[in-house]
Length: 412
Image 1 (cartoon, rainbow, N blue to C red):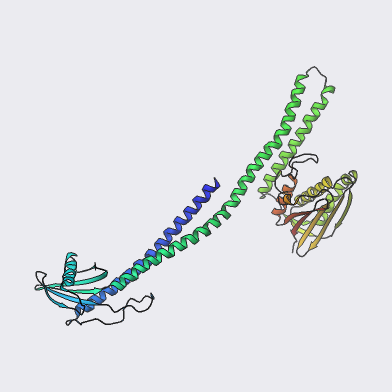
Image 2: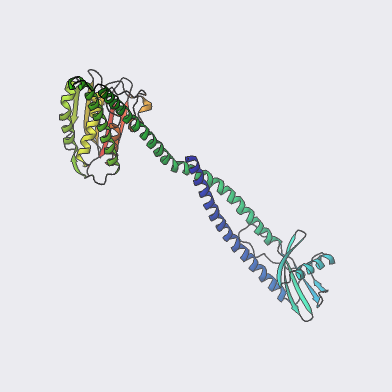
């Protein structure tokens, strides 16, 4: 699908550019042709006004147009005929036989016009005919150099057009790939998101359906013997509710028009989250150390800032391992507030560092849920940080510390 879209983009781009080039080159050619024709007509009029025709018209050519060095001298001759178009006199310095002049006369008369052009052998000629009751006078001018200029101009245009089209094709292909790539990535991410969401919803629905079947098959059992099936149902309903709430929250983050922003004391927000999480950290026997610089203020939404800290700290506790350690730091760095949350543990593989903020992404391919959750926490954190004009990223090493960094611009 995207290959066809890319090809259509290239074809449309090349067609539009080709039309513009054709119009530009046509305009230049028409202007040049008119100028050359005007100068030829002027020269014919000048020669026709001369009573005594010179043996050779010797002058510098008028059709320079920056096309190169001066061309060869132009040649002309005059034929005078009677009223029956029989040649009476020829004024010419050209070493031509009578057959040439007869052919030139016939070619001019066949045009049935006062002026015109014709080709004889490899030469191009222009003529002007003036009639009177006793016959006519026909002036001929060699326009081979001018014709060569126009022909070379056409070949030059074709060559330039071919080179430009190849160059434009390569550029258009590059830009087409860059233009389509975000759309293609968004499409596949959306497709993957729908597949993952369907998978996550399918599992609890299957569990609920199974437990309901068990309850229905044991109608005679009292409530006391059925409580564990109800507990399983309640547990899966809670998981589904959390998943749906997270998805709705992400959707609301995509449309942030209703979010209220103000000056937020980030130091205070981080300390509030720490106080909330201290009991959980103590129960999990996790070593915890934090260093929060006071008076750090950013522009944003306080609830969302606290949620980012909560997500990062909760993940650090979950993945720190038995008797693990968690470190939290908040400090100023240049014009940014830098929050870092580190934990011991297995670490994150290098190939997963770029994808850990994708929705439903998990480093383990088995998609185990030992630590709970659906892989949406870091996606929510990244969406919030992006809305606040900040940056979130992670660094990790195998069996070493995993550290998440959040950089937010300070209020100046």
